[in-house]
Image (cartoon, rainbow, N blue to C red; front, side, top):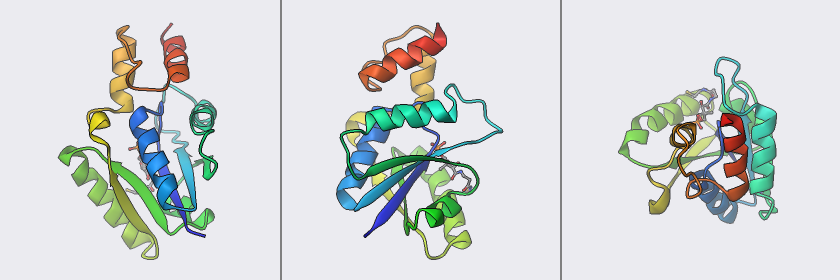
Length: 158
Ligand code: PNS
């Protein structure tokens, strides 16, 4: 069985993330989405909330599991018995950071590879940061996140 992990902040999950998750789920027997619990950041959603939202958003994908993790992504991959880390690549601006991260991970864990999925064109501009910024100013985020996430985000800014 081939298992891949998809680590990230997912604060909140966007349609771009979901595109990567569903495409990963076609390629691997199992995809475990790892929601980073990072105590140095102050996310809009708690890790428990992000896990709950992701579970709801991926409930139609039987081979996708959602877990939280803290520490290194490669350690999370090892715990999940995964040999592949999936990351989405939107544009050239992502590349430098993603390459650095993939190469660091490769030095830390030569037995684990990073696989990049280029984001579908319709989501190439999209990020969780953009979603939060638009929502903070009362803008329409219905094209960026699933419908139920729109309500969750707006509740945070109310
Ligand atoms: O969704 P994000 O914020 O772009 O995800 C970044 C993430 C969680 C993949 C990255 O910050 C990460 O892997 N953090 C865990 C710590 C780690 O493994 N660092 C080493 C790679 S530089």
